[in-house]
Image (tube, rainbow, N blue to C red; front, top):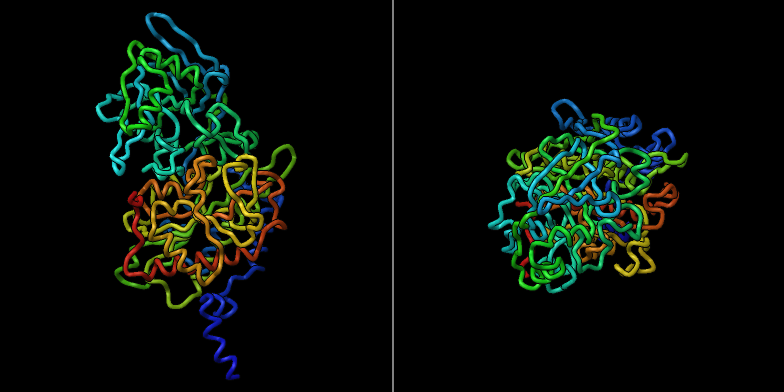
Length: 540
């Protein structure tokens, strides 16, 4: 008995959850039961805007209520958001250059590609805006002195100096400014009516009109709507936002044609920007284009976020919030085969459900409030989380941090897209990636400190890589765009990603249990700390 008394304190330092009664420990039987249901034939792959996705959201919401959370959306555990589902009519896609009284019509598919939720019929003069970036933290603005209002803007994809490890732009990693969403939003903010995006002439990554080497995405899009398999399962979807502007991806040949009156080649302009970090933006003389597009299918729909609230115990701090998030949707049934999405992302979904159960039964309650959100329509480029940040259920100004759990249950291994781009150890059974840590050294430090009790091997390699575009591929992104510390806890890509073979029996439950404990301890630390982690880029 004396020996046990001496050992118990040492044992408890390895993790608070391990020293609690059974109902306050991670229960693998509950995780497995939820996983079996979410990945079953009944839920048919939980594809966005399907009845089965609706069932999944309501199942999660009901579990939040059963666990003892409060409704987060007035009296509801659901947040609905309007979408538009659409399929472009290929015959209507047109991009026409007008110059010196003559027109040149480019070929869809070969010269350009694009899709938009509503009909496009635009005509405007063209201005070149470099990389299309406004980045005051780096003292750089492609729109400085450029009148883009009412015009169509031509830009490069990605960002300057991305192959230079010494670059102020996060070395060989990406910043938020490289993302397509950021570029479109910035063009819209400067009054543009349309956007033409071309791959940089000098690059290591596949071009926008080239097929990606791996499944699940191309360019700086996301991991969902870049895949042809998803388009076969469900039409592309968009938030119902009338202020959006269309963006076409254009080839190197189109880029050269559009820049012909600038006096410089595309490569010369890129190399000048990269060398000096000074914009080369300009109006393009005698250059105007028409952008046309219509849809053969267009219909409204409603998707759902499942949300539950655990109000904080401190009278002052309970107005502040820590978010624990995941997404429940996946790719549906295609060609008679079920895309169950056990790892992507039933694993993160059941983890957030388990975290809600644990926190709801713990005592004392954390000082800050905890909001548990499982988003819908992530595979359609994070529509649920983008909607949430535009319509937050708790003030964003008081949101201290976001821990996003997605694909936490498999061992990382190479997919074709990562070959030659990343170093992946032979044994990753105990490894976890932190994506987005670049934007909050404080949050990264908190996670690393908590992990000393858990013993996972943590890696930030995706913050130093611009080939797989991980920064732009999950629900942490909208929160980073809003200036909130947010990190994606990510087990890594693996063979079978976005394929029918992503099934429950392939999950590493030991890793999942560790990730849940890590998320619990980190969220608890943030919720009880005197102040929250800071957001910002590191000094270079």
